[in-house]
Length: 152
Image (cartoon, rainbow, N blue to C red; front, side):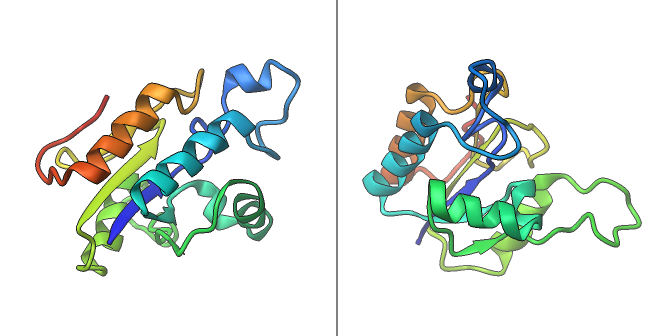
């Protein structure tokens, strides 16, 4: 099973999109959404929502309606943590540990709080998902490379 861990803010919307008069917190950039959908179609991956949008039912509904369906969400390991902030990479790793059938995965996020060995394809909050990053994710998910960190 191929999995795409998907963040929303800084991936499916951006500062550049907001400068056009759009609301970051209530919507998604149709061009970025098309790129996410292209990744899904080209790789036959499933999506796990790793965004903070996973914490709000209304936001999850927007993702399902406007971006894509997703099979699951990563756990909110911040809740009840005595350690303070838990890196998002630990939440991804927890999900991967519970799903050994994953053969390949990629993380699309504008944050950097992932583990060194994880396949992060880093976007920027300024621009969101780009064609170049989408193509790199497609090549990775279809290429079968399992080692290292692909942060770009």
